Image (cartoon, rainbow over all chains, first blue to last red; front, side, top):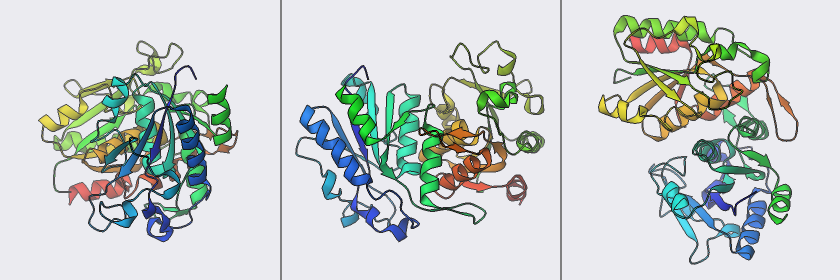
Length: 187
Length: 187
């Protein structure tokens, strides 16, 4: 990694604790703990941290502003002075000034973690890669839920997670584990 | 469908005929024929068609401008007067004026098909949905290749294709078959 990377934590919010609401079967229960390990390292180093918060516009969403589910999980609660970008769609780059912020601060490298692998994390990672950021996605600091296809076929969360990461790796981002990432940025 | 939708055909180019180059295992050999069925219907109706062409900036890419692989496949070759947007990254919305074009022409609904399901089609579909377009993705008019995860695990093309579609359906787009789509727009 040639540049100091910003840590981009996507939608690690309490609303995701209701697994059934999101399709059930949530994989990788360690995602939040691994995201917290990354965050602790970034804070120790004084590197840039960006928290992304989903403020759903849907009246019934657990992530709607004002709901408990909209709050960040305790493990990654932003400190005073840390940057929070609110968004209403999956991509952290759409409807926000995130791209401008990164450009203005000469940030060219991003480490991405958060929820969920195949929705907001994948969409944000795709745009980060396509915008030309050197992008790292931390496999075990993200997680997915079961999905149902348009034809009714069910896909378990672990499969959704793994396939989403395989589609991103080498095309939009370098996918690695928390241990690998921390070793890389400490080298 | 309340509006006349534009047909967005993504990267249906000869370079994808070299399956091994893209990872092998290509699924759904009928994708191009189904895209051609959609195109024929759009032409008959005089509805807007947008061809998207990947002009890779990579020196070794089969999709680099000037290579045979950069050309559109015969089944969907643009007619004189049909719009072609060139792009250099996965998303048809990044580095192009596609969004401006659609807005200026009051196009609010998109039908998406092309190559490949989990890379350019998925990325473009995600951004289309997040930008607020009423987005339809035609499952059997797209196809994928085998993928290898960051840990070396292989995922067959059909699985990559199905899981990618399941992650998009209901969140970014309505996924349906060519038959279902043609029935819907003929209703």
